[in-house]
Image (cartoon, rainbow, N blue to C red; front, top):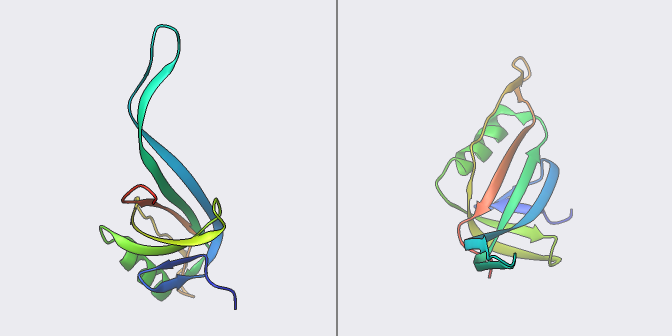
Length: 121
């Protein structure tokens, strides 16, 4: 079996419907002078992983949510920009889970963004 695109706190995440890697630039004191030239300082480029999960059983969703609801967590991920695996500390935006089928114990598909705590190295 191929290596998972994302592993969070040692848990391989294979239930992905969508996986995008964004290189988010963070600028300080950005502005333009009277001639229109941009003046700013680049603080860094922060990886952002946009994940969309397929529907899954309650227990698996609870396992993933338990990790994503922590303030910070370790992630090993495939960086499409460099064609290599990298490891960094990330945090997640708000996480919303919904019931798809209560009788079968399934949650709906859901999305979450993982944002790097520090600029990429």
